[in-house]
Image (cartoon, rainbow, N blue to C red):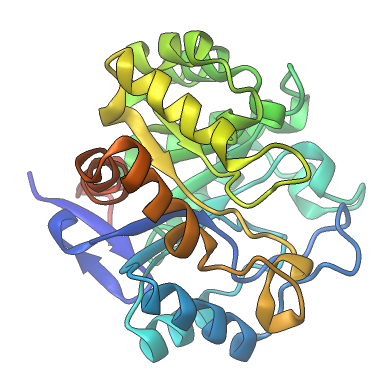
Length: 301
């Protein structure tokens, strides 16, 4: 069957994706981050242009339903910059939604139907897990995402809180019918334990590291060491890297920093110098082309 990557401007062959930032936000609004809303198309376009100038050809935008996602805005950014943009359906972790959110009362079938409809334009299903647990809200979202994956084959991308529960999340999704090879786990560098993550990689899941530039939490050297350790354990073909610049204060176009291009301007060249160009090519080109590709199924439009 034909494998594709679904972007906001249509399907492309995996080999067309090119150098990819595997986790970003161009539009995002959540009650957990008051005053940090990303809601301006011109600002998003400016940031995306800087990413292209730094050598990127694609980004995966992880903003799900109910949190300021702007699919038309993503199309506008992609058209203006030439950047391949993969958008997300799905739901974030429980804490991001107000008590009166309609998503809290929607049942599994209704959520799955919405996710499948969204996947006409989106290329991944986003989920979120809480710290060392799944709340009832998150459990419903997981079940709905599994149903949508069964119909479409789309990858399932999961927020891990402080890098916890990686293998448990993979096992939970596998029990619901989602193979580990279709699961991308974000923020694992927030728990920089190569031994623990190696078990998750051995199961077949994708390990995403998206903390470059967050110096107040940990230096980039911590992430590079984790990449090196994982590669030494034989898991270089399971690693993805993104910037996750999900706050206004992180974007230069809003007056903040380090900017959307940090991963490609600063982190990727350092990775190439310290760990080798071939490993960098695998992480930024070869791995995303596999992780975000899926086979078209009859249920797709």
